[in-house]
Amino acid sequence: MFYLMIVVFILGYTAIALEHPLRINKSASALVLAVLMWVVFMFAGDQVLVNASGLHKYLEEVTGGTFASWITHHELLHHLGEISEILFFLLGAMTIVELIDSHEGFRIITDKIKTTKKIKLLWILAILTFFMSAALDNLTTSIVMIALLRKLIANKKDRWFFAGIVIIAANSGGAWSPIGDVTTIMLWIDGHVTTGTIIMKTIVPSLVSMAVPFAILSFMMKGDINRPALPTGSSYINPTTAFERNFIFFLGVGCLLMVPVFKTVTHLPPYLGMLLGLGILWITTEILHKKKNVEHKPMLTVVGILRRVDTSTVLFFLGILLAVAALQSAGHLELLANTLDKYVGNLYVINIIIGVLSAIVDNVPLVAGAMGMYGETFVVDHYFWQMLAYCAGTGGSILIIGSAAGVAVMGMEKIDFIWYLRTITIWALIGYFAGAVTYWLMNTYLYT
Image (tube, rainbow, N blue to C red):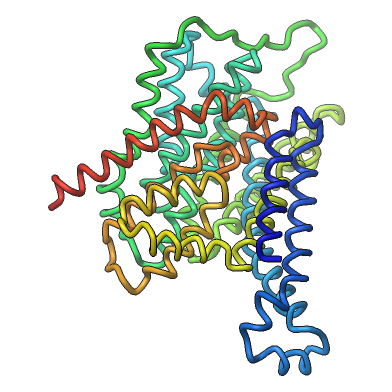
């Protein structure tokens, strides 16, 4: 059963990757994969868990059922709690961004980006995404940037390519900030890294991981992008005023920026800060548009916007994260971490491998496994923790489902897994290894 879980995961992962040839939505494949993984885990419980514990007879008497069913239920609830935080965060962020978009608030930015040159637009979007991701986080930033891309680029393939650029830049920008990526947040909260040191030691490698592939692309890209046609004709009436557009834009962005501040001040999970921001915007738009016409009001308030939010993306998140959680509970990821420690040994190489693996399975359990193994071994701000933050954060760009940012973009733009693998993966790999080598050189020759 232990090995059957691996087989099921590979088959489900393949179905997600081959979404377009199979003509089966990836969200459906992810949900089926998640349930099958936990079903196999349940039947494997007697082998994997019960025989390893002397508590099973006692627990069978207490719970009135098998130990396997008890531990499966416990593990499932534990992981579902963590996954729900991500889902509510994603739902809140997507709704806020859609609300700003429905008010045409992003015109404040898009009207200032006049260029149609692909190379110039590449660097504008990359730099903007990189630093926004550090201030917000890579997931929220990706959602905001995709909303911007829809206003800037009409052609689907061109928009997909720049969406890939956004994923790389967002993950690179999130890796060096304590609040930019969930894995860096984990290391920061657990006391393995400090704010000043993680920024100082990883900002340059993170910048390199973004700049190197984009610099190469600059010599290869040619041509211009086509802007989407603006609504014209007497039938189109803009339902918002300039004041409403600007007000909702700044209030919405302010609510997004408030999330890391909320977490720092209250020590509560980030999704609560996101839901607070959504609630503030909800009340504000209800008051702001209470006198609007019936035909315009639904597109300007949260009730109407929620109908437009892509729920399939949320369900895809749920499926893929639950599937990986089953691997974590069954011990596959812990076994992987122990194997790396035993047969590789070199900490730089271990981190690089963890980063590559984080493109296949979720980086959160991989980092959690590493923290469990080395938590008592390395001191605060040891180079292992710093490079782990870099590798786990940027390695997810290698595959589109390797990071929260990638999954969100994939759902919003319906990007094909194989297309990303053929078109973007090579640039993500180049940047990833360039940044890893940069960190190794800096740590070896500059900081010693």
